[in-house]
Image (cartoon, rainbow, N blue to C red; front, side, top):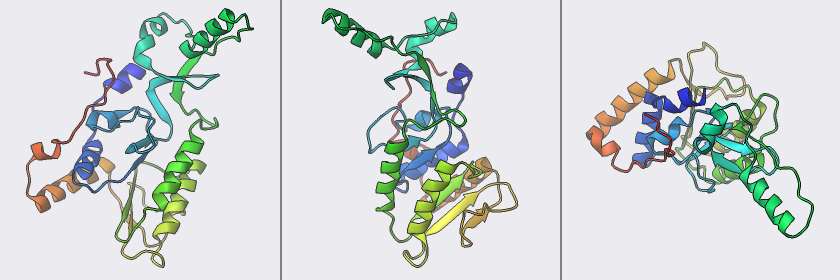
Length: 240
């Protein structure tokens, strides 16, 4: 599953995000996807820096995490072992064990590596970091800012909590001409969204295609200019 996911190509919506970023119109992406495709259009999803532009709320299948110490590694480094069906001990835990043995101290059993994704009903290992990032972003909300929501039913409690914060910061009584856009094929807008939400009843890929066309028309520029600032953050594993 990991190989199929990682070898997949970015969608038109991913390309829209790249264009918005290159045009200086994108502040942050909060993504529920675990395929890591945002990396293929230049977002550093593997960075742990607070300033990173894309936050993967549910992790990514391209990495693995120690069940004990929470150390994170690229999946590609352990493919030979995983292909054989073997469990993999955490390198950081093993190193601590060697240090303990050298000091004649009792070494603890190492943790095992597991997919670095959030499973159903599992506590989020990045909850504090995500809360800090979203809280900081709330302080940056200004007039005419736009919150674009797509590809989610908005039913997960953590997502709803983040969204409520942005909605409160963007209400007309606090900010002027802020907009909330919800792109979804459903006929109804989720109850969590305010009445002034602009509901675009359209497939997100179709919406992306229309948006890209409109941006190109307004800026009268060429495709190659949109990718001028692109950086490639794909891991060493062959994604082709």
